[in-house]
Each structure stands twice: as structure tokens, then as C-alpha cells.
Image (cartoon, rainbow over all chains, first blue to last red; front, side):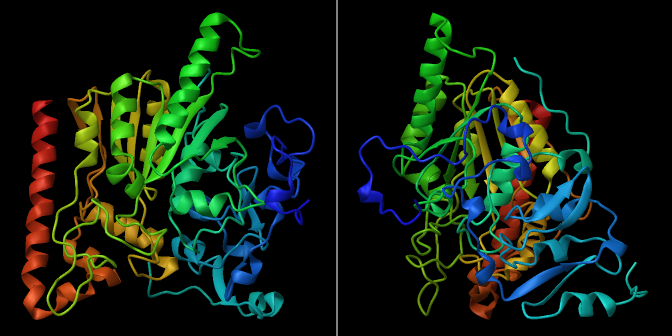
Length: 131
Length: 318
């Protein structure tokens, strides 16, 4: 369907963002929704990134600042816990790292090619200069 | 009336299921989607949305994708507000006639527009909606420039800002006219609620949005939306810029109830000098040349005068 040109549809054709019927979208989490190819959820902007955020669970205090200020709905929070970054939709803007209040930060930006496990192993230690 | 969503703290807020999707084409670090998310997540009710032409519209509805998980319409540059007002009028009529299949669902009607589509092009349409008393909310994503088409000045562009149609150079310091006070103009329609919000003060914002949803009648919301491309700052600094704009009182946060009851909802503990706000943005870079330094002083005086004016209005309840 994604390959069909807009002018190839019949007048009155309908493209749906969900398969079947959803009664309560506001009460359905994203993993429980049956997205079709017409929702931008099924697209990816991962190739926009030059730097990627890496999440270190050990220092996270679940303040959810990154969740509220993420412009791309890429911070996945479930049951009041931050559980990771959605790498399909993250554009690598770095806002989450800027607003992270922990010391050291629980999110840091690394180049897109960086190895996540290697970076986690050498995470910066607590900075005593800052309060 | 359906029950209002209870949001006590950020942890509770973070259990919301977003109805705005990622992989939209807004710039990295764009404040538009932060504002949209905070508005949509403030309620669990069904939504009827519109977007006037602007960054938000062109970036969230690119064939074959849509980023909206709610009824959404785009018609023209000027008439996003009237489209939603029409839907609201139809809803009201069908409800009165008893022809709604689910009369208890109580949808909320919101129109989003940029400052170009609100301050300039859609001004008459919004004014009409406010005057007719539709039960809608109009949210302005105020980035002070036509960012979608390459940064032309709008009537929201502030003095001294360099834009493509009012550029700074050898003979000019850029925009020469002051910004229009849209919240006051809309409040003078005697609408039940008008407010200025900022995405960094999410609690204040959600409170105002929920108040707006609860009242019966048109609601006007002006949200500051720092634009990384046209204000020329690093994408990661969006929230820092928003903090500066509210703490320097360039964007004071206040609400006007029924056109006369003004409340200031955020008083910064440490007021930041306006110079710091200007220095953080590339569009004001030229103001720091010696010949234009006087403009920074004028900026500070103007912001102070506006703050004093708001305080006087709050005291006098007029």
C-alpha cells in the first residue's frame, strides 16, 4: 500500500492507521496497537541521527524529565519506569541528555557507530564539582 | 461531562499512551511536538483536531503517513480553527437531536496553528470562532517566524530579530515592529479562558489545558515554541531556551479568565536578564555589535514594562 501513488486511489478511498477497531486509543499503549503502514509509527527516522543517546539504567531515578521533553516520543516509559530509547524514532537531538538531572547523567550522547556495551562499561564517574 | 484525567506528578503523567507518533518530519529538537504531546496527553477523551498550514501540518501528514492517532483535518492556512468549530457545531446539533451513537463520549475540539496562521493569516477566522462562542480550544505554537517556508517575518516576530524578509545587515537591524499582544486581543473577546504557556513548565501547562477543556466556550492558548532552525541554536538546547524565555519574562506565564481576571501563574525566583535570552540565539547575534547595543537596553525596558503592566492588571482585576 505504501507504494501506491496518491493519485492511484479511487475517490472516497480510506486509509486506516489501525487494523480493525480501536475503541479507546488513549487507554491503549503503543505496543498493543495494531498500526498499519499508514501510521508514521511504522516508519523510521533512525538515519537522521549523527549521535545516539545511550541509556544507563544504574543511575536513572525515573524522574521522567526525558519522557515529557522528548519531541519524538522515543523515551519508552512503562509503569512509571523509564525502560529505554526507541531507536526507530529518535532523531538524536540530545534534549533528553540535557534535561537529565542525575550525576553522572543516565543518558549520554555517543556517535552513531559507538558500541553501546563498551560505552556503558566506561561510563563517567560522579562529578564532585557539580552539586 | 466526562471525568478529568488526574495528573498529580510527572510519574503519573508518564503512564499516558501518546496519541502523537514519532517519525514525523519535524526538525530534531523541535518544541512543536513537545507542546502537542503535553496538550493531547492532558485528556483521555476523544479528540477532534485540526492543524493550519505550518511546520506541524506539513511534517505530520506526509503521504502515506500520518502521525495523528485521532480525528485530524487540515484545510487551508487560515481556517483550521473554523474547521474544528464546524465539527463542534455539528456535534452539538446531532447531540441535541439525539442522533449521536455514543452521546456520552464527550470529545474535545482542538485546533493547532503556528503564529503565522494565527497572528496574521487566520486572525479573522479565529476572532470569528471566539466571537461565536464555539466550545473549542485554539493552540498557537508561537515560534515568532514563518519557519515552514524559510523564515519570513510574521507579526509575532520581535524587534531586532533577523528573518529572511527583515534581515539584519549593513543598513538594518532586522525586524523593526514589536510583537502583537495576541493573548490580550483574544481575551478582549471576553472568552472564558486565554492563557500563555511554555512546554518547560509542564505542570502549569497541563493545568491550563485541563482548565480550558473544562470550561464551556472558546479557549485561546499561546505556547512559546523555540525553533532550533530559525532562532539558530543547537537542537539540544530547546528546553534551555524555553527556560530562558520564561525566566527572563520575555514570555511571562499568565491566564486571563472571562477577559478580565488576570492571574500570573509563574514568578521566576531568579529573573534572568533579557540579554542572556538574546545572546543564546543566532537571530539576535547582530544586536551585540556596538551600534545596536542600545536595542538590548530597550528590550529590557520593554520586558520590564510589560511585566509591571501584567502585575498591575492582576492586582486591579481588570
